[in-house]
Length: 139
Image (tube, rainbow, N blue to C red):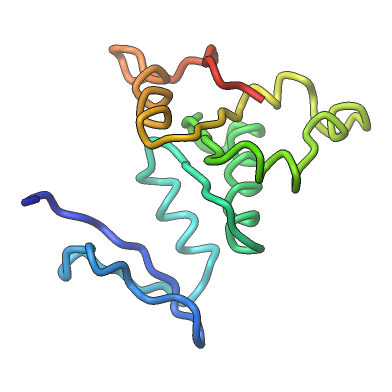
């Protein structure tokens, strides 16, 4: 492929290495998570979260919070692999406890394949670039 790939990498003691598919001139190194997340959200048209640990959860929940509070534009948030996410996050309990509203659950979609994720992203945008809130794979 001749396409370019941008990488927003975080400098960590042992875990994180730049993706080998990143275009070398477009590999940016960050020392602070907050600045890296800000740059992601400024440029992202969607967030697709794969099973992960604290860093993944941090990025997911910060994105959801910023969308919920209308501090950033709404983008599709897609959790890849519903079985994993249903085990670690119980959104129904958050609604039952009154700490999120039922409509907040609609900020999240699930996908099992790259094709499903892409369909959700495409369906999320109208011709004028605004996001929809009606998706098939909702929480």
